[in-house]
Amino acid sequence: MDSENEKTVLPGKLLPFEKDLPVKLGASKIKTIPYSLKPEAIEKAFENFLMQGDDAPVDIVWRSRNHQIQSILYPVRCFHVTYAADWSATSIWQHDEPYTVYEPKTIYLDFLGREHDSQGFDAFENGRYRFTERGESRGSMLLTAATGAELRPFTPQQRMEPVTRYNQITDDIEQTSGSIQDQSSFEPVITYDGPQQKEFAGWVLKTPVQKLYAKSTDANDVLTNCFVMPLAKTNQAAQSIAASSIKKIAAEKCKESVPGNLMEDFHIELKADYDMEVLMVPLYRVVYHDQGQEFECWFRGWESSAPFYQTKPRDETLKLQVQKAAETSSEFEAYRKKTGKRMGLFMAATLVFWAAGSLIFLSAVPTYIMVGLMAAWFVWVFKFKAEAEKNKQTQTLKKEESLSGFKKAREDILALTKRSDLSEPEKERKVQTILDTVTGKGE
Picture 1 (cartoon, rainbow, N blue to C red):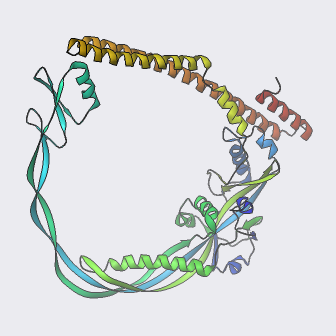
Picture 2 (picture 1 turned 90 degrees about the vertical axis):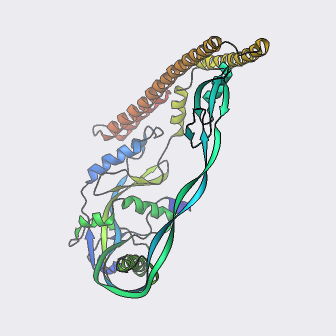
Picture 3 (picture 1 turned 60 degrees about the vertical axis):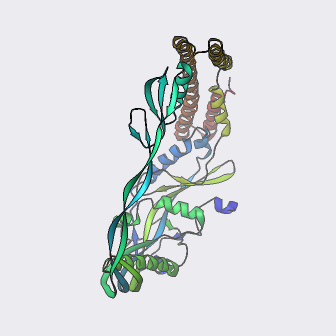
């Protein structure tokens, strides 16, 4: 995508909304959805949009104060289609006939004779049955190591089980035909050139066109100060898209009339008339500049919504300041490294103690000793996690304080921009003072 196309989603030159617009567009009628949001509401939404994000420049509202709000209509071709269709097909009548086969299945029996679908273990200690463990559990392995219990796998067995299958029996085959008459459909066709305009169209028409059309009125009067985005592709191409959709709809309706369980060689002949209207969807386009670059964002004119934009001004240094403010303290980092090493050494020593004790005494280390060592380990882990959570809360608090400072500075500059009792130079000096304070340059 070249840089010129990245600046705007407009597919071409805007058209003025004039009385002869239907003729220019090749439409029988123009329908419009009224603007329910006023420019004042868009102004406020635009200010909120600029200040959103942790990396929004603190003085972005001031830098983009000389912006323009344009009323632009997004056109959508809407086809009112009346159609009829003839169909023919080979109809097939079938039914399913059940039969039974026997297939082998592996089951697993535990020490108590209970059946299981998967392998597992019975635990024994000194030849006596203790418990049954389904699956290859790490917990049972650790328990075996700690207590000296013996794990015996389940006993696999195979048996034949009945399974129902079906044969498909054909009862009859016939050539059938029919027709549907006096059908109608409403087919909106959205056209665009390239992925950028496709994304934009998806945002504009997040609400289905059928629902938007229900809110529309006839455009009997010229909408002053409004411009129309040019339609992408030709009317003939758009009608071809509508025709393809109608053919699918007609085929589905015809198939509902085809008798039998199955059909083959289905054919349809479609006869259709198309009347094209153009639905005008109201939008606001805001054009603004920052540091020599032009930006734009779009708002829906009939409902409050998140804006559409390709890019917006950002200040990456703000993120770095927030991250620095929320960095892990050096004290906790030293504690984390020191404790991590000690915990690792403790666990290694515990395992060595268990192995050495088993070899020396030719039996498992007493259970109460291993349980005590494991309890000490878990207490240590719990204490470490508590310290980590405390440090995390401290980091979060520092981050929130930093973000809160930037947010207040943006709000202060917004209020300053709206003041009418100050000259531009005075406002600029006050804006700079706020910037120096929040970035630490004024200290």
